[in-house]
Image 1 (cartoon, one colour):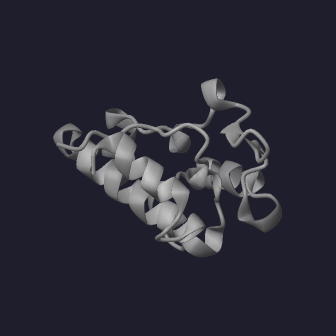
Image 2 (tube, helix red, strand yellow):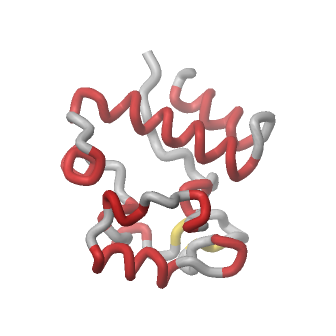
Length: 116
């Protein structure tokens, strides 16, 4: 069975381009939406993403909407804790494919790491 985990040095989730997420206001509070939009930098990448090391510069203090946690996903998306694993895997697969492509090393690494 596949188990979700954050694959180091991927960063696909740090591509925040609002054009790719037209429904942001459906699951972010007005304050979170303002913060989210303030984090979008050049090319749609988060201003806190280190493109050289491919990691978040504020990982320990990242906003709630950047966290894959049962309580966050329940509140934001209505996803029950027992559904979180499959939902998070599907989200990552879509995001990685959208950012890096369906034949990317990032997608291959993610699939290998989670056991897909």
